[in-house]
Amino acid sequence: MQLGAFSVSLSVKDLEKSKAFYETLGFGVFAGSLENHYLIMKNGNALIGLFQGMFEQNILTFNPGWDESANTLKSYTDVRDIQKHLKQNGVALEREVESDSTGPASMVLYDPDGNTILIDQHI
Image 1: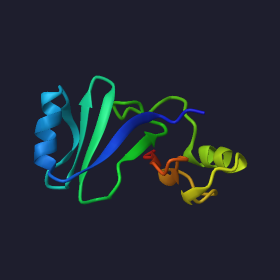
Image 2: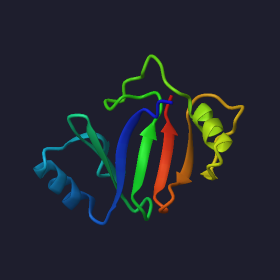
Image 3: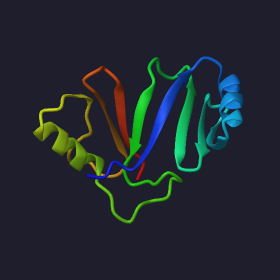
């Protein structure tokens, strides 16, 4: 099973301060905007999403079908196949994908410690 690009989505209090901090660590803006209250920051293969006022907890995010530069992968595991696998293995899902749908879709689950995991397919 391939989960695609991985990033940590951080809930931040001050987007501009967080942007400046991560730029000091060598990250640059890859996507998003201050006006839209989120930035995707990139340093090599590392991705960090900074989100102000969009959610309360930090989130582990996977993007099936994308690499870390948002390029479409030739081969990937569709989010619906990931969901089927998880359900067959007894993993409870907080939000599910319509199993007969196609294209972009997302689902949410929690790890045993309550950490939020978003599997967010954009293609």
